[in-house]
Amino acid sequence: MINETKLAGVLEITPRRFGDSRGHFTETYNADTFAGLGVTTQFVQDNQSYSKDSGTIRGLHFQAPPAAQVKLVRVLRGVIWDVAVDIRRGSPSFGHWTGVELSEAKGNQLLIPAGFLHGFVTRTPDCVVAYKCSATYAPETEGSVRFDDPDLAIDWGIDTNAAVLSDKDASATAFAALTSPFVYEADK
Image 1 (cartoon, rainbow, N blue to C red):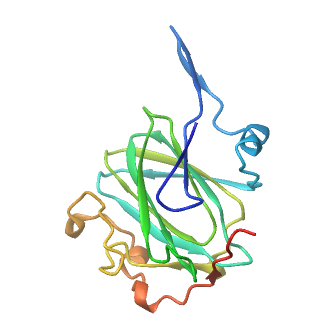
Image 2: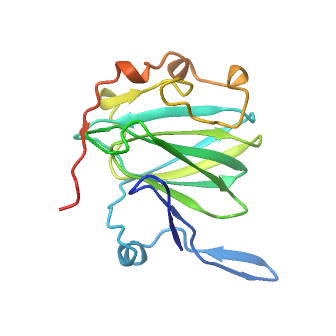
């Protein structure tokens, strides 16, 4: 099942679960099934993060072309609030954000296209998040924006003064200082 978010291209995808007395089985990714839904991205890298504390924020991050990444994010343990921000210059939704609660219990995923910032906050302790990427990690192309930037006004659902951050995320740039490497291309 696919749900569109308020940002075109950012999709919540909930694969079918097959349950019985033992538990359940889910096919979390199948290229043919996704292609049938209009998602033809080729994923080349899988990542996994563990966050010990509730209120841990990871983001807002991006990789610039030619290493721009499409991401497919899911939660293996716990609950997160997953956020995408449109940073495609010329986009009608430039600087707008959307968020989706992802959880182990729901089994839902968020597809985030290239041209968007990505970040999440853990809503439970001991969260494990897995995500597929369409390009390998290229540190020379990465960028970040402050998660609590007032121009974005993202509602993280926590006291942001108590957020657990990496040094890199704590020193991220302001949104107004970002020179986005992405340009909006209207549907042809």
